[in-house]
Length: 597
Image 1: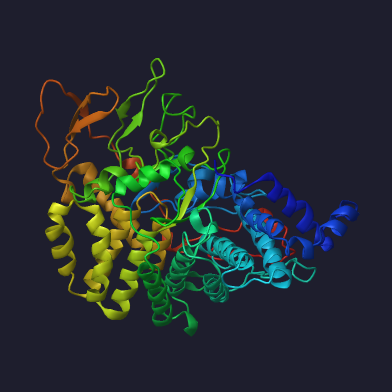
Image 2: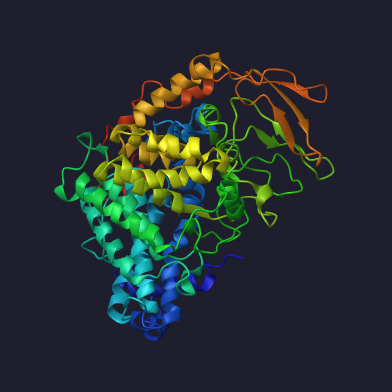
C-alpha cells in the first residue's frame, strides 16, 4: 500500500502551515491554537512534522483536475508515435490533443485545473524551503537536508511541467505576499536557470538510491533522479521551443548548447558511473515490475509520482482496455490512447520492445467472469506497457487505479548521455550509451548485428543524432515524452507531417509498408484466453492452418490521418496550451496569451 499522501500530512500542511500566511486568509479562520501551538518554527524544526509538510507539496498532483485526471491523460498528444482516440471527435478533448486548444476549453477552464494545482504545489514548496532553511539546519547527509533537497526538486518539477505545457509562466520563488499576489509572466530562460541551480543544490543534499532508508523507494527523491532531471532540463533549456517571437533556441548565453549539453553530459555520466541505477535485464520484465507496483529503488525507475490506491488514472487512461469486469479488474477501463498504427511496423521484428509497446488487442466481454483477448484493428492499437493483468492486486475503484506515473527512468539518462556526447565529443563517445540501450532490446544472439555493427556504422554526428531520435521513439512509446523531445529538436511539425504520409502509405500498403499483410489469422493458446496471431509480421501472408480463424487487417486510417493534428493548423505554432480564461480573468490584468491565442 502506497501511503505517501497521508491525511495527517495534508491536513498539517493546509490547516497549519498555510494558516500562518495570514495575509490571504479570512481572519476568522486563524484560530489561536493552530498559530500558538504549531507555528512554523515548530513544524520545520521537528522532523516528523517537517516530513509531513514536504510530503504535502505533492498532494495537489492527486486532485481530479490536476495531474491525476487532466494533465497526465491529455498532455503529450499527438506525436508520430502516440495518438489519443478522442482526437477523432470534435470538441474540447480533441482541441487539446490535435493542437487547437482554446482558452475557454470546457475540459480545462476551471479554477481548480492543473495550472492552479501546480501553483498550489509551488506555494507549499516555497513555504517549506524558506522555513527549512530558517529552522531545520539542513545539511548534506542529514534528514533535514534530504527534506530540503526534496522540496527544491518538487518545486522544479512543477515549474518544468508548467513551462513545457504553457511556455513562459509567472515565477514566484518565495511564499506569496501582497506584492506578489498578481504577477506577469517571467521569461522561461530565467526560470530554467533558477531550476538548474536549485537542482544543483538539491543533488548535494539528497542521498543516492538505497543509500539510506528514505531513498529505498522510487516514491522518494534521490540523487540519481535529481541529476537525471537536471540533465533533462539542461537539454530542454538549450533546445528549440516556441517563444512569442517564433520557434528558436534561447538567446541567453548561459543556456547555450555548449554549456547546457556539457552540464547534461556531466550529470548523466555521474548517474551512470555511480552504479546506483541500471536497466532491468528485460524490457518486458521492467514493465511487469512497474505494473506490479514494485517501488524498490536502485533499478530502472528513478522517480514516480506516488498515487495512493484511490488516486491516479494511468491504467484507467492508457492500459490495454478491459470492456467488462473480469478476472483481472473490476474497473472496465483503459484504451483512451495508443501507439500510432505505423510504429509496430517501424520496429525491427527482433526488437523485444515492439510487442510490449504496441498491442493489437483488448479484453472482451467476460463470460462467467472470464474475459479473453480479442483483436481490434490496424487502426486501433494500445500501449502494452500498461496492463491491469500484470498487477498484483485487483482494482476496485470506479475512477482510479492508483498505479504510479513514471516520471523518469534510467534509459533516459543513457540516451541523454548519448545525445550530449555526440554533440560535444562525436559519435564514438555516444556509441557505448546507445549500445547499452539496444543490448537490452535485442536477444544476445543478434547483438553483433543489431547492436555493435549498427551503432559502429553511425560514423557521422548527423547519423548518430538521427539514430538517437529513432531510439527515443522505440524506447519511450506510450510514455508521453515524445512531444517535448520533438519540440526541443525542432522536429514536431516535420515528424507529424511524415507520420501522416506514413499512415497513408500503410493504408495503401505502399512505401515501407508494401508487404504488411491485410489479413490476420488467430487462435487461442492453451490457456484459452491469450491470442496466438499469425500475419502481424511483414510477409506473413499464407494461411497457417485450419485451426486458425481469418481476420481482416485492412481498416481505414482516415480518421487518424485527419486528426493527428487539425487540418489548417501548424503544430509548430501551437506547441503550448493557452492559459485558461479563468486564470486570465483572475490575474488583475497581468496575464495574457501569446502564440496567436
